[in-house]
Amino acid sequence: MTVLVTGGAGFIGANFIYYLLKNRPADRVICLDKLTYAGNLETLAAAEPLPNFKFVRADISNREEVYKIFEEYRPAVVVNFAAESHVDRSIEEPELFLKTNIIGTGILMDAARKFGAERYHQVSTDEVYGDLPLDRPDLFFTEETPIHTSSPYSASKASADLLVSAYIRTYQFPATISRCSNNYGPYHFPEKLIPLMIINALNDKKLPVYGAGANVRDWLYVEDHCAAIDLILRKGKVGEIYNIGGHNERTNLEVVKTILKILGKSEDLIEFVTDRKGHDLRYAIDPTKIKNELGWTPKTKFDDGIKKTVAWYLDNKSWWEKIISGEYKDYYAKMYGNR
Ligand code: NAD
Ligand code: DAU
Image (cartoon, rainbow, N blue to C red; front, side, top):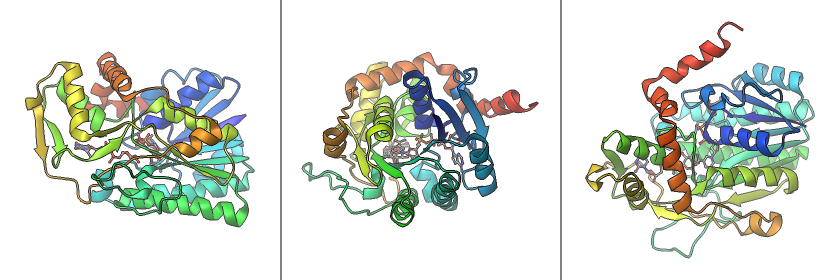
């Protein structure tokens, strides 16, 4: 079976590609990625030599490029991770988020229909539900929670979800949607909270915590997210939405202090900075549906996952040092420049 993974040079997409190559060795995996600032081909270096893996550079919002790839590889399954994913960037420059996250999703679905893909999966986010109050720990996001977005990023992801639902209803398009909570783990781009804090702490730089650090996120180890998507592809029901999360809620300040403790660094490194505009207070997923219907449960608890993640960043300094220096951008030219 040929599986097309878009956004596979990014954090979760790359982890998913490694998950497939390990657990579904009979599948052929095609990675389609534009290699934006967030895409790093070096992340896929271990996959490159494998005969059942192929990387192609393309933009999901470019119809011609996408159709060409579908025509050549005829994927049976499409998993769309490709997105502009950073909330802070969406607040500064929303337009690219609309182009990639909404138009790109539409074009991918058109290609899937035109070239007969049997299955399409849209990787969405819990941010489409907006936020929950801090003083109501009894409330959680279920699949029935109304969409209520806060940032240009979450609005673009919610728009894409609506488009997928419209294709399902109008064209009987064989799609599923998953909405996951905050991921963490290897290959996480160092603009996001956890990798940024680990790297700043290692470099004895200040750790910028927005507001009072009281906002709550529901953390899931990336491999558990990958396992959930794999399960949805194999056992999930077409037309359904599945929430993914493991009840690992922490305030941002708790997360930052945990990282400092693991690294043996002083809490004096913490610096409270101006809050994010429209900052969502709390995310918390109710994963009952995917647990009951598909039998998914997360394997990694936050306290173990965060230790593993810190260890990964300690063991893979060259990966993130090249990102910080900008050197990782040369990798594509080196690998593909003369082909
Ligand atoms: P990321 O920013 O690390 O990676 C995104 C990847 O998409 C990059 O490789 C980038 O080059 C590629 N890309 C961007 N625009 C593209 C385009 N126009 N055409 C082709 N490729 C393009 O993101 P991530 O954190 O790995 O998130 C992956 C997906 O999962 C996103 O759809 C995101 O909304 C969703 N999600 C993320 C989280 C999280 O905590 N990170 C949680 C839930 C859902
Ligand atoms: O919930 C899923 C979402 O999680 C995904 O859809 C997004 O793609 C992903 O980026 C993530 O969004 P968040 O905004 O929650 O993640 P981020 O790492 O940017 O921020 C996590 C929390 O930490 C948030 O409350 C803002 C805060 N923060 C973030 C940064 C980068 C800080 O306090 N300081 C920082 O420097």
